[in-house]
Image 1 (cartoon, rainbow, N blue to C red):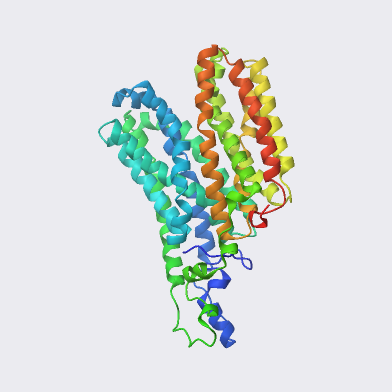
Image 2 (image 1 turned 60 degrees about the horizontal axis):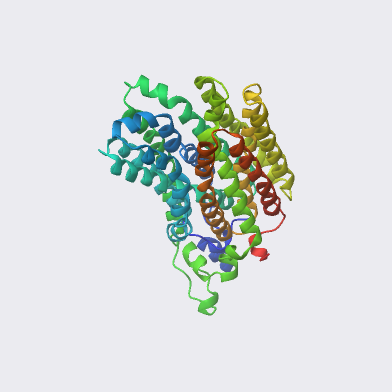
Length: 455
């Protein structure tokens, strides 16, 4: 389905927004009631299933590789530098490939792009273990990350378009599924590899099945949208000038929409920039936590196995909170209080790691897990800071692409500080210091205004 100038506002789920429905336009002209939509019963349920399955696939390609990174390095004879590149490539790919999401969504419709993204994840994850060398492995990984990047940007768009009255609830649902997929891949990849015979190739490739299942859930949605976009009856002879004739397809409606409504200039909006900074700073903290938290605990004397469990605790905190926080945020006019609460939790966690990393390890893991729930909050605010579907797709692409670019140096800088200082004091001070601008940007992004306001 093509990108329309307005998100639906009357019913929770519609296959095409009101201004672009041929049947509705013709019914208005003739006084007849619009024909019933045969997909109106099953489409909302299928969209919910598709959202959950898509979200489950947005991180396993990354976290399953982290669990088997040593085996992959040995099997492909990778250098340490190349292996390090693998851990920093995801946010860079998210930024580079995410830029294409709005254009592709306008051309093919967001549902079709998400479906294609799931197919790219399935293909990349399936092919990369058997690519026959490091270049092929990297290329296949980039294919999977491209699919993740496109879907990352379009998840808030799908929610805004088809569930406009339940943005917080649906964002919480897919954020919870995303956190669950992240934790699941990190926790079960190693035992699953052992159960399947011990080969790292099979342990990585098995996650392609989950992506293939997501593709199957989106195919009927895409077909339904294409069918609903076709004219259902010959158009009557125009009785008004061509410029005001009702469009016959959603794509025509988007093309004829006023530029100010369909294409807000998000790069000129202070709200958009604040949201991009908030997104980038929270992503920086999340990638630093995923990459370095176990090492912090191990250097404090915590056994390696326990350090891994502590990281899992931090990640699992996102499962329930990712559902609760967006629902609460969606009912608030300003999300600043939630931003401050999450930021203070992160500051407390870093302070604990500085003063008593081993003694209070479980508490610090929980506090940092709460702090990392700034991610679903950022996604919720993307859906709330634009009034139209076109505004959400542009804001989502801008905030996520700029934000992920901002997050790339963080884990590398922390590693450099750790290597040159020989301890964790300087890196932890940096990590705590980044929470201050994160809270400031989040408060600005959480104000009750939209990018169409031109602030």
